[in-house]
Image (cartoon, rainbow, N blue to C red; front, top):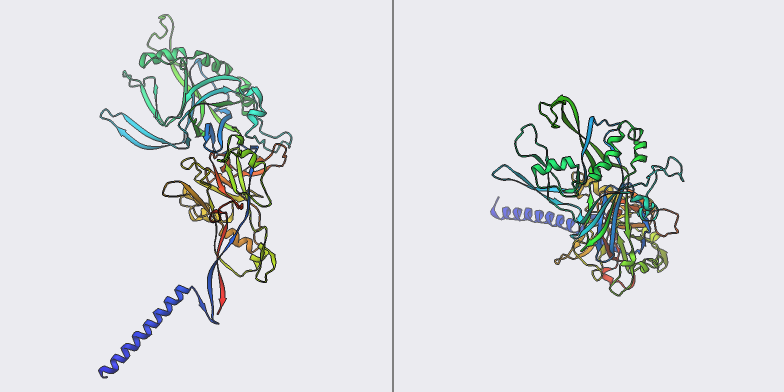
Length: 577
């Protein structure tokens, strides 16, 4: 074979390979080629929903996953005050306190959510822990009063039958329970604000019998301790003099009569009797200085603990009472915890009339006059006893391919589209919002008829099941901020929901849109949007436990076109050559 023929064959092979590669590149860039000269093209359809807001007069606050206590000042919506009324149960019924029992201290403990960030050990072996508080909002102070409540929180709704659980609402403490909630004042904390410092607890010296008292540290919390005069005197011998609050013998005497003196009584024998006897604890917050402080606390570990001492059967070798003619018994110690449980109600004092827009419009008046037919310029989302938005998709007519008016949903269902993505960018009205830490990180979309999450939520959680704390990041994306850290928009993906609506597998229901403190909380609660409305409506728990608010752009004609709320549907359709 001569050189010329070899070159011809090599050239032919190179051409064939180049042709194949070129065809493959063409296939990938176009997306699809099929027999018959049919290919595909990508397009976008923009649907503009009708949107408006609805306000709540009251919301369910019993059964919450966590509770709020304190005062929060929203820069747009104004002040909210959160109080807590809770039932307690003793750690054991029919408690025995021992011979010659004496109540030494009463300790109220309310732990904050916190994270241990650092542990240091000095040259003397002293350990110091550094914590960072989670779910504490505001840096101001509040005044806190703690009462034994005389109001009985029943378990069942007597108006609905004995099997229906009693639901309590955000306005019940202030409007319905009366003065009995503030029964006996137990403690006051003036100028209180949550501290991130660990708490060092000192206890009487242990078996090592050295000169220093034993100690242990606990994570940050509100902790109020009342010492008996005897315990206070003992503490004074080892530490600085106790404060008047710690030496308040009146509180010790009060709890002695309630518990130690009731040993063997029917009141301490079972849960029902005890809840009627000791009806609950009421934490009441009032503003003090600055913007106030609001804390989401760990209700499951909140308690009041009675520490007491008693005579054991062991005779002491020392003369403990100063009388050598009597036998002195070694003293033992015990405790009884009153744990917060069962009915726990958050009271919320909030009024939309405290919020105004830049033009002086009152937010309360705006919410009372929403246009549910044509939609609104602004959507008002506020947590707690707040408000949410309604999104009504595909409710109007469009001009179809024949120039005729047709229902938008009927038109879309006739299209042979492959839906790639359906999503909404919901823009924040930056002219009305004070951006920063006061903006909610998440918003939450739900089926307004049932309160259930959409199918996109379920798929998103599954894909992030390994780390549920960062779940639903695709469906319910976090706030998107600009280079100046101002919130710009939220992006909500509804692809699977829209596909099901187009395929008639899902009804085209109205959607609710709310703020969310925790998008992993999907339980729903009841609320009422007007004082005269006797029909309960649905609001997610994740909105009720949220304290923040935001103002989003709706579909109104005064909204800038580029920021008007839209459902962007990206699709692929076939196109004949």
